[in-house]
Length: 109
Length: 119
Image 1 (cartoon, one colour):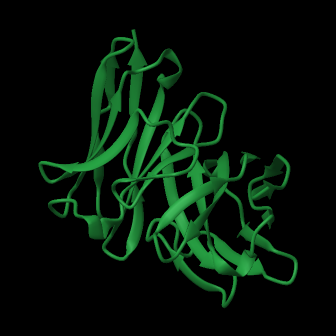
Image 2 (tube, one colour):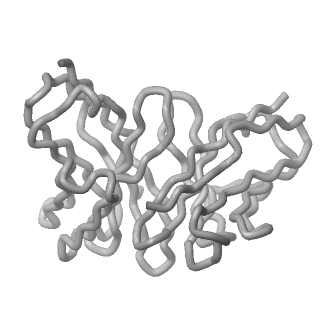
Image 3 (cartoon, helix red, strand yellow):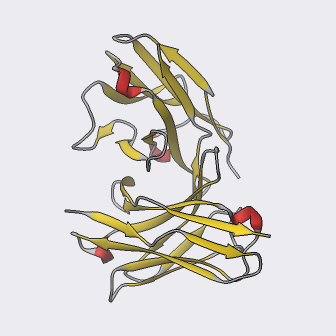
């Protein structure tokens, strides 16, 4: 089964920009892996942010954007807010199955 | 309002049967997939499997194949996740999530069902 790898943790200053990535053990991530990104805060259910690599849901703040970067899926937060501190997960369709990454704990400090 | 409403928390013993539910409302239940996701205490999200309620087409993650059963009753807009014999290691929060087939977008999540299994 595909292993999906994310940075375990990242720290960013308020107002700064940070990019989280999502790599696949099978090779470069492509749009055909349909990357989805989710945010989860402690004690809450996950919330969807991005689908199909770059597409935002109607509720996704404009400061979140998705892309492909260097063979990985990427989630960029521009103008980070304190409330963006959370765990972020990517989800890829690989080898005929959906697979989550291990998550990135984003600290805003 | 589109929502997925999950059944309440469960406390069970090892070896017992359990079936938890996820009811869709505010949309055409048979037009979207329903996925199930496990989150063990303090850990990340794990994809378990997915079902299309229109025809009960079900796909399991290899890690969960044979360990759980996913089903759906389209007449009442409910998807289910069941265990025939629980283990202590099944202790976790279980989420359902809606998926759109054409775009492969997962958008709406249930609030989760906490399952606690004592040995």
